[in-house]
Structures are given as structure tokens and as C-alpha cells.
Length: 495
Image (cartoon, rainbow, N blue to C red; front, side, top):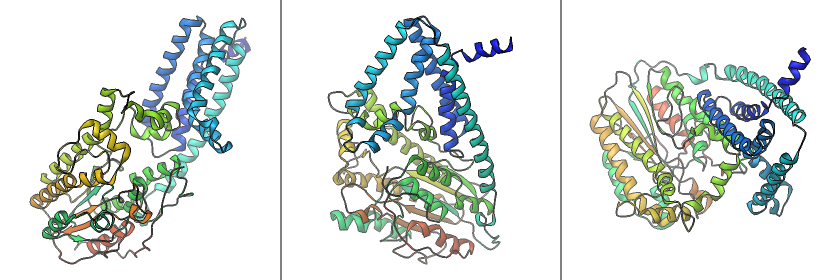
């Protein structure tokens, strides 16, 4: 009797849900300590709902739950594992024909049609197939749960507070408010002049008049934002297995490193309040901006799916040209604009607020990073031109965005200095330089200027790199004795 009940359970099409659970659980485990549980559960709910909807649509055709579930399973498996299949084909076939969409899409269309017809003609049920898939995915889920438990334990041990994350008490230190203003992809003025003979003296003169020291030959250590920020906030170089083939796992490690970064841990130990107006999560301080329908962190799970690959590789056709969908292009192309506005306004408001504790404010503004929303005369770029320029990424469009970027910098700096209620430090920095159609070294030549309201000394070497920025600052502010690392750069490429 028990065996009969077990067989009936095994033959039910629960594999459709198990497939989704396995996919999300596996992605969550791979990126453990990076993706919030709530975001993963939300993604799981979206995929389960999609699976049920697809199954119901095929039920209208088959009027058989088992066959409908099998067909839905095939569709969802294609969605989940398309990217991995495409990468395998790229690696296995040098010519690349079998990994192209022109081959893959017609091929799988034929496959799905054959499965649809085959299931329709099949007279016997699919009980054995259901039982096999149920057992298979139950075992895969069990393996991932064991893996997850192991990663949870090891992560707990690794993230326990240690003396390396703390800082000695300094009763005589000023504990100023610290504003870390990160302007994404802002090249140094010297690089702008060397590359394009661009005169950025308007900003430089403003900063010097306010008392900033400008590190004219500053360099970032990495040319990708998450890597640069992770290195800067942890005051150290990163362990990247293959810098010329960065993977989702590498990005995941950066996101985790940013969230649990060394600077914030040290400042919290000194009694600082951490205020996050960036595009990254900090521990107990999530990012204030959301970039998509699905939470940003779950992209670490979804990046290999069919829809994500299509969006990455082909979606631009819907933003411009004869296939353009105006309402879609208008909404997506202005996402970064709205995020910037939100972060700028939040930072301005923060500069006017009074806090009992000293504060570390990290504001990450994606300017002059594309899309280039403003032209040389600081007027908003026409949407059609904006989409076109976003595809070309020309230096002239980048340079045309600088006057508006400089205006925002002046606005923030003036507000912070004018409304300061205690000593204040402002770190104005680019995470890297402009990276399109220029020699490799210039990808790293970034804007770097520092203001302190209580000292006229220039603490920073003109050639400093980002990895040493907070080492120098901490040594002067909090009497630490960090040794400076060798200033070097690592050129990254995606796999």
C-alpha cells in the first residue's frame, strides 16, 4: 500500500516546480552572501507563476496535466539553461556558427514543435518520465542544500569580526563627516587634455578655490566599476582568477566585498553612521535605487537565462531603428537618469541634515557615464539622439556631458561645505576613466580630488591610485599606520 502511494506521488508532475526551485536555489547558493533571501524568494515566485501559466496554456491544447507539464518543463529548461548551452557551443566550435541566434532559435523552434507533436500523438501516459524527473531534481536540490549549508558555515567563520576590520580607538581624532562622492567614469582633467585637448579648468579652478587638493595623475586599479569600488573600499587588490575572462562569480565576489567592506567596518567601530546613496548594497544599508522589474541582485542568477541573453545581445533593436518600441525605449533609456536624480537629491538633503554621530556618506552617481543625458550647452539630449549616442559611445558625446556633470559636482560641494555642522572631508573620485576608443592606460586615469575643512596640507601623492586613497586618509584622520601598496592597474575583460 505504501509503495502504491509512493508511486502515485512520484508520478505527479511536481518536477515542474522542482526545476524552478533547483534553478533559483543553485544560483542563490553559487552567489551566497550576495543575493538577499527575500529577492531570491521573489524570483522563485515569479518563475513558479510563469511555469504554471505556461503549463495551463499547454493544458488547453493537450487536456492532459502530465503532457502539459512535460512541455512546460522543456520551455522553462530552455529559458533557464540557454546561456550555459550557448557558452558551451562557443567553446566547442571555433567558427561559432552553432552558437549564433540564427542557428539556435530556428533549431529549438523545430525541437519544440517535434516535442509538441510527439506528446500529442503519444497514447501512453508520461508517468515514468515524471517519476524520473521528480527523483532527479529532488536529488539535485538535496545536493545544493548540503552545499548551501557548507557555504553558510564557512561564510559565518570568514565574516566574524576580526582585528583587521577594526581600528584602534582615537580619543583625540576629529571624526569629521566624510562624503565619498563617486562620479562614474570621470576621467582626470589631465587625461582629458592629453586625449582630446579638452579644457576642464572650470571645474579644477572651482575645486582649488574651495580648498581641494587635486591628484592630477591619479589612477583606478581596475577598469570595471564593481572591481574598482570593491578594491577602493577594502583598501586592497582583489583575487581575480582570470582578469581577461571575468565571470558572474567574479562580479558576485565584488558585490559581496562591497557590502562587507573594510572602510565601513572600521568607521562603524569608530562610531560613524553609514549612509548609502550608491548603486551597491552596504551591510544593513541597501541601495536606494532599483534598476529593473526583478531585484538587481538576482541578475547574478538570471544572467544566463534565455531572456537575459536576448536582452543583452538583441534588445537594442527594440530601442532604435525600424523595430523600435517607443514606450519601451523611453522607459528603459531614462532609468539611469532617474536613479541619478534620486541619489543627487538625497545627497543634497543629507548635507543639510544634522546628525548626532559623525557620518560616512557614499554617493555613487552615474555621470558622466553613458547614457549622455545632456549636451555641451547643458540641455537635455533628444531621446532619439540619446539612443543613437548610447550605441556609439563617442568621445564627443562624453565630453558634451561634462558641463552638466560639473554643475552637479559644484552643487553638491557647495551644499556640503555650506551646511557642514562639524569638520568635513569630501572625496571626489571617478571609479575609472572613459573607456571607449582610447589607449588602455587611459581607461584608468580618473578624477581624484580631496577636501578637508581643517587642514591645508596635501596628504596625497599626485600619482596615487584608488587602492591607497583610504589608507592615506585613515592614517591622517585616525592615526593608523597602514603601509601604502604599490600603485598598479589590472585591465579586465568579460568572458
